[in-house]
Length: 406
Image (cartoon, rainbow, N blue to C red; front, side, top):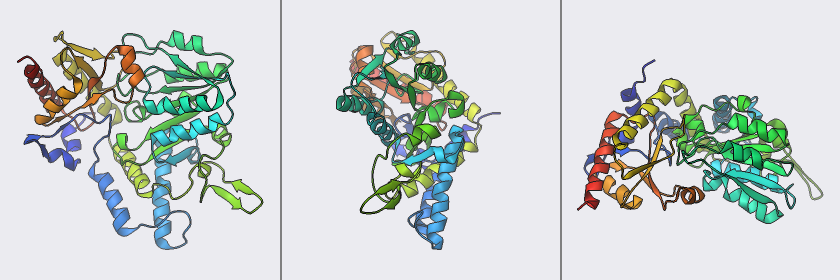
């Protein structure tokens, strides 16, 4: 099936605007993707025509909003191929989901226990585990990467042992684009009795995750990278893994009963959804997943890879450009450094020509140290990008390069 990028682009109102008198070329989707009209309309309709708080009301608006909110849970479950909808916890984002699990795991950690992360992790999948270790005396261990940006699986397997309690690994690196062998990692971790949490904030967008096939204990995703709104995400957990976690936050909705003498908690997922949830945001997330489901995902992913290859072909003859991460099967994220030019300067000059890229350490400081760089420029490709965007990116970078050659 041919991927109709023009039809996709037409569904994103923001792509018709100009930046600095130039057509917008948005190549920062790994940080946050733009929103299609379907998402904007769903959230607007909910606010204008059918808004109320969820779960507790008996009136029509409450029932309509609850149905839409819970529909988002069903759509996340289908997206990840969860066994049941009760395995999906709706959170305020991917970071919140990881912190939820980390707090629960920390409740049973002992001094000397070990948690393994990798050198390519986003800070959101490092700091919660470091905090858990600080509080409990557990040890944080690091699985290294190879020079091509792939995970050193042999080294990871060597780290696994009887003290390993959990392995936290990204499905797809937000800097390198590396797609990790999460099923193999899960099998190896389970063989020593450890749990596995997968950060799928990029993977849910670009890797078509199947949590049943992967076998992981936890899988985390966020809404705003998946063409949905900010402020919402989801945690998948195996039924027994969620049951073993204590409540993270206390409040309304997460209880069965409260008395002066005793409090009993609701079963998952509601045990982890204290207070008023991100109602409108969840409705927007459900609309985003619906929208995505109307596309040929395989054709869309191939489209993204074709754009990535076109960009790499335009850079590979330049000896001053260092492309970061060239692992086989990687996703459509292009991070690079340019000799003699600071990433921030390059990004600011490229913005003059309407090209939006990200520059810095991309919330992955240990990875930057491993690569021996202070930062990089990142161009990330999405379903709405086209060949003209790639060509504009290459031209803007060339112009920025000439600025430093004066």
